[in-house]
Length: 322
Image (cartoon, rainbow, N blue to C red; front, side, top):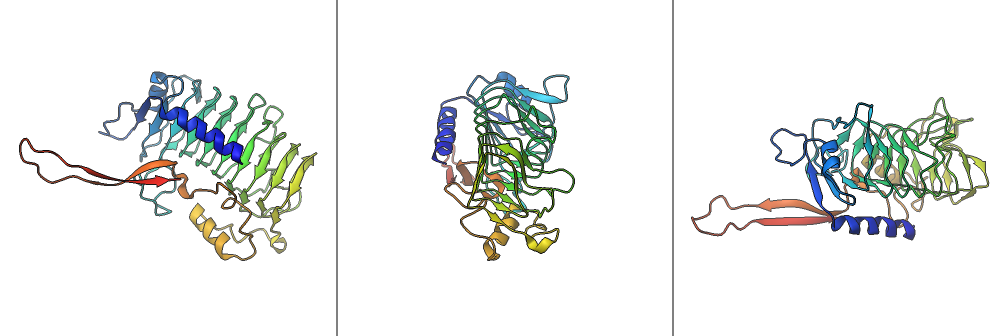
């Protein structure tokens, strides 16, 4: 896990030295860029694009295809997700919802703090997707190595059922919550090779041939919580996981949870679940609502009036999200 910390820390340190471009599609926002494609076009390698939360989905693209190509090494930071539902007020209470599929082609891209209702297709290596709500298919191509999926709320499959082209190598799948029920196709995580799958929580019960992790090889699977039996594949190391069988029914104590806060509360209150396993365990546990790391503005105090020629004293209270 320390390797993962170093990777993200180095990427964020590099981003701190780069140009920051702000995007908002809200009316009269004052942001320099109204669309994410416009900011991508203006950005240089290594720049950071910060996207404001909005009641309007971000659905633009720079080409005639159905997706947006990300061909530069950039950092994308959104405000988080399920902010109102979880009572999170930092940086406002609206998510940045991406409803246009992204093709992540460049290596070294970081994506943090978004609500994706459209898919992500990863071709580049050393890509980090963290603290996002992923409600559409995530695809990790054969060309992508060292991909990190960390601290995400995942409501769909990672890699499709026909995944000969989607076999991510040396990936890190850690501290995620998987909420999709498996009823017709086995495996929420599919086709990974020589990867680490650790400290994830699977909330839906599955039985029979429908397992949470399928057709993987040479992987280490540890400290996960499975609601239903498990893993298919060969040459894997499977240790220290907790399997919740739920007496053969088709639901778990987590099945009716609608927010990650509710999931955390069940994990805390239900004594069946061990505290040292699942998304909220380990050295870098899941973060409620995916609020990005770094400083956040908690309060701004501005005097109502200032005498002519006087000094405008503005007080800004900052909080730090780890």
